[in-house]
Structure formats: structure tokens, C-alpha cells
Image 1 (cartoon, rainbow, N blue to C red):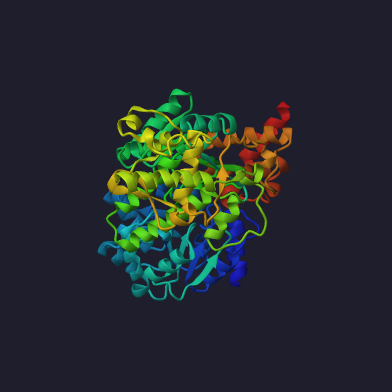
Image 2 (image 1 turned 120 degrees about the horizontal axis):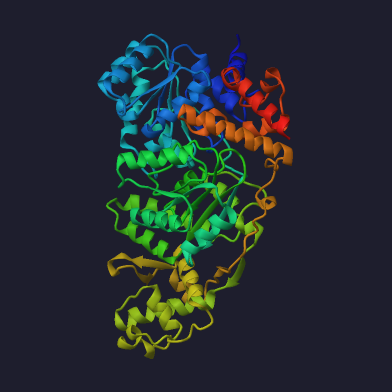
Length: 611
């Protein structure tokens, strides 16, 4: 059988899909024929099929290197439901279970074997793999090898030896997020220099990007959940463990089921909370970035950040967990001046060398640029990854409600003058709050005690509110016109670029923050999305969801492992009345048709008989 037909047959028989999407066909054919590949594909784009199909076509076992020990069971369960012979080796198993998996591998009874990188690199595991037949190596979450990245895992650096030890076994490295520089680093560190690169579009048109200025962030977050996403599953990211727990407690007190997740919690607590998030509907996970990589839950309707991420790569990776099913989802971020000051200070105080600090500073600048842009967010985001969107997306806050801009040159000169005079005349530096008090003419005890009410700049900034001045300061920091003096506990200092503004040689057009009301109609959430189901089909869909929930509970797996929502929607629309008709629905392979076909037809028949 020709490579193309073998892959297509596996895709239809096992996974229930009639055709590949995007670059999947080319990637699959390349790996089946023995070629190495580096695959960049957004979350929800179908990366797993790119190694699962070749592993089923090629002789031997596909070895999948994954850092996600906590999720391996779910990944194996999902494959088992499809009739794929899959297993894992990791530290959660006792020696008897591990021995059974090893014997299955040696006797050729496994299609896919998931292994954590630290386990793979042990002499015992390497010797085991030497004795079996390997179809391919798949290195998932390959960005973990990047020492500049947000998810660096030192054990990934050892994976370059795979090529040396098994030179004839094809390798495929996969990630959802990488700039050109990160992609080159992945190829170099994994010895994939001769690999073919496949870079899909990073555009996720179903995800609506919305970035707001922090005012009362808890209230803002609560409004988002109640008005936009009542009862929806979602993830809320915080920078600190304390904020994770405080936010989860706050939401629970407001009647929202929220669970905390961070590295400081016990292993059992983290595992229990993650399991509930994956298996139950409508759970909100409040987490640090320790949570989320590899999460396959398709119906996450929102990802919210209540602290500014450190980089666009991290932001894109985290927001990519929303809307994996292709339905409308929200990526919401609230940030403020204090976020910028804190991030600058963390970079300045880091233990890295100058090159590291410059790299982190550039990453932060790019993130600030995305936050402060007055143009289409999606265009700016894709531009960061070296891709071009020729038209505004129509599905971000800037497109839906265009922000106002204003000439902030004079206001900036007032602020820079205040900072200059305090330093030049008195050798003093202060933080944002005190500077704003001076400009707004507020006679606080600190202002009076320091005699700052006698300065020529005292009271000259009444045209802006305190929030307005904070917005201006944030934008000055974003444009490099101010710096954070970490030795002065976050005080503000002029930069070389400040002089041109003070002398009137540079005009500043700034973003004006307003209480813009977002358009929350689903018609504004992107184009070419799946439409709402007709009333009758929606009722069948809900009946099928309940049927699926019961099956998943009996099997002890997340509901989406049985069938994803997209498949249930298609069934609800088609209302198949026979197994042959059901077999033509995307996502219904031979094994699932055999396991659940009659039960699905009975569910539909019962619903129609009752209506």
C-alpha cells in the first residue's frame, strides 16, 4: 500500500477523519518515509496526529518523549479508547506495572509508548529501547529545550543523543510556540539540523484577544466570568502562589467553582485539582504557569491573565489553551503600571548575565508593545512570530472597539520634568504614586514633609486623573523613555531617550484608556465559526453530552476522551439512524463505532420518541 493510502486508511479507521488538515499530510508522509521533522503548529491544530499516524503505519513502537507525567494516563486512555495499544513509563508506576509495560514493548505489543525525558535518559530505559523495535521518536513540547524559553527543562538537553544512538530512527519535534530564534535553538540543541521544518499559521481566529488596564482587577475578573462566561471552564493565570490562592478563595466566595494550582501545593492536591478540571464541567483553574502545558481539554472557553506575562511566547502558549475545539473563546489580560515596574525590576535583579537581561528585556518590550498597541492585536501577535495578517482580524478588542489616541507630548514633558528636577535639584528619586501626587497638587504628608509642594511642577498636571497619569507612565516605560531604578526600590529614572521629549524634538502619540464596553455578542467573536445549533439539534446535543458524561464517569476518564464536542455536534445535526450513517461522522473511528455506536443510536431514538 502506498504511503499516502496507508496514512489515510489509519486516519479514517482509527481516528474517524476523512482527510488531513493543513500540513498534516505532508508531515505524516515525511516521517513515514524516515525523515526528521520540526513541527510548529498552534494548540488545537492537530499536532498529535503528526506522530500518532506515522507510529501506526511504521513497523515498531512510537516512543513519545513528554514532560507531562501527570497527563500521561489521560493521553494513554484517549488512545486506548481509539483501539490503539498505548502505555507509559514514569515514576507513578510500581515495578510490576512498569515490568508489564516493558514486556509489552519488547514483544511488539505496543503502538505508542510515552516516556518522561528524565526516565528515557536512564541506562535501564536506554537498554530497554535497544532491545525493541522503534518506529519513531516524537519529542513533544520541544520548546522545553530552549534555555531562553518560558518552560525550560534541563533534562531536554540530553535528548540530542537520540540521533547518535538510533541514527536510522526518524525524529519529530513538536511545539505550539516558537519564534524563528527559538526554532533555530530547538533544531541545534536536539541535533535536528537536517530536519525539515513545518511552520503552520499561528492564527487562532476563534480566540478573541482582549487586554484591559487594571483598575479593580477582582471586580473586572468577576465581571468577565459572570457576564461573558457564566458556567464555563477556564484558566486564570497569576504570577505568585499567594495571588493564586487569594483569587481562588475570592471566586469561591462569589459562588464560582475555582481551584488553585501551583508548585507549592502537595502533589496529591495538584493531581486532584487537575483531575477535577479535566473531568468536570465548568471548573475554573486559578494557577501559576506551572499549570497548563499539554492540557488537552478542548472546551476551555477562556484564559485570563491578572498579571502581565513575561513574554509574547509565554502569553501565546498560555492563551492557546482556550478554544481547542474551534468554538469561540476569550483570551483576557489585565495589566497595570505596577506590573511593568515589577517585571523591569525582576529583570534587573536577575542572576543572569548582560546577554540574558537584554534578551528578557526585549521579550518584555514585545509584550508591552502588544498591550499598548492601538492597532489589531492579532496582527501584532502574528508579526512577533514572523507571520503577516494582511487585514485587521475583527475579533480583538481594538478591532471591535477601536481605542482613542492623543498627543501626550506635553503631559510627558511635565512628568519627565518632575523626575528631572527631583533628581537634579535634590538628588532624590520617587515612585509613581508620589510623582503623580506632586503633579496633581495633592498636599499629602509626604509631599509637605519633603517640601515638594514648593516645586515649580507642583499642581501642573490637573488635566489628567491619577489613572490617566499611570497610563502615561506605563507607556513611557514601554517606549524606553523611563527606566526603573531597582536600587531605589522601584523608583523611576530618565533614560537617554528622555532628552528628545523634554526638548520638544519628539512627539508622543499615546493610547487613551477609557472604560470601553466590549461587544459581547457571539456574532463579534470571529468569522467562519461553527454556528449555534438549531433548537432541535441543540436538545439532542445536550442529551448526547449527558450520555457521554455517564460513560466517562463509568470509565474514569475525561468526557472529551469519549467524544469531543465537535463530534457530538455533528451527530446532533446529522441524526444518524444507522451504524453506517454514524460511521461517516468525523471523529467516529472503527473502535468507537464498535464500542458506542448502538448506544448513541439508542440515545437519539429515545430522545426523538420523547419529543
